[in-house]
Every structure is written in structure tokens, then in C-alpha cells.
Length: 176
Image (cartoon, rainbow, N blue to C red; front, side, top):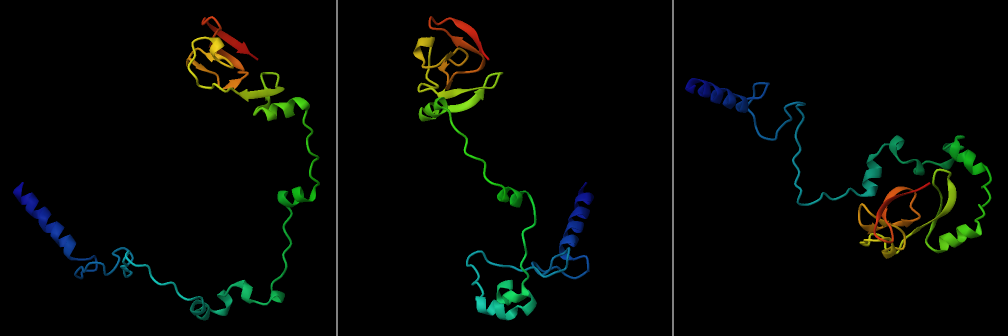
């Protein structure tokens, strides 16, 4: 066992002393995979940005921005036909007329939407006592939900819900 640890220590030391090319290893000189020099930079102070005039002078004419070239050399491009241009060329649909019921619903913070299996349009309003603890139906503006013991967040509530009636009795109410 002692011999094995000695061999392992020698191999490990040899790996750290030489590079694959056989030369001595000096820290942060070159990348062992690509052979390129490794640049070391400090995170303390940012480098000053080059001035715009110096950058423009060092760029060849072909790589300078298109704004410096005369406008006559730049061809005018028409937009390609697509869904965006087709939609823009059509006239906007006329505004949808709201029913008096829908207007009244929206004034009371309600949402005019399709509800139930038939998709009938009606007003769904948030309740003022949403989440309040309850033990019977008379304690809530909407329904008293039996499973959570709290008042319902909206009225009406569609689907099947376990509720507490006005006398505190638990029943299942299904509204389609």
C-alpha cells in the first residue's frame, strides 16, 4: 500500500511539472487546450472606452456603418408581404356594441363572460368578503364554501361545490 501511494505521488508531481509538449509549466502563460495566451485582467477598475473617432479611423471603409454611405447607394426596400402588412391594409372592424347589462356589469367591477355549459353571457363579480371565514351561508355575500370554510371569491360559482347552507348544513350545489 505504501508503494502504491509513493507511485501515485510521483505521477501526480510529474503531471504538474510538465506540459504535453514537454516544457516546464509556468502559471497563466498559455491555454493547455488551444495553446493561445491567457489574458489576465483585473476586476477592480474598468478599462477606458475607446473614443468614437479612433474607432472609425481604424475601421476599413467596407465595415463602417451604412449611415456614412451616401443615400443614393442604398436601395429602398419595400416590406415583404406577410400577415403584418395584410392586417394593416384591411380596415379595422367596427367597435362591438355593449348591451346595457354588460355596461352595468363593468361599472360594478364585474366581468362579462360566457359561463356554464351553455356558454350563456352573464356578469361574474368578485365578492367583497372573499376568503373570510364562515360557518353558514348567511355570513357571506356569495356562497360559503364548505371545504375551506371561507366565502367564495366570485358570484355566481359554476360547477359542483360543497357549500354550507344558511342553517350551516353541508350540501353539494351544482350550477351549470
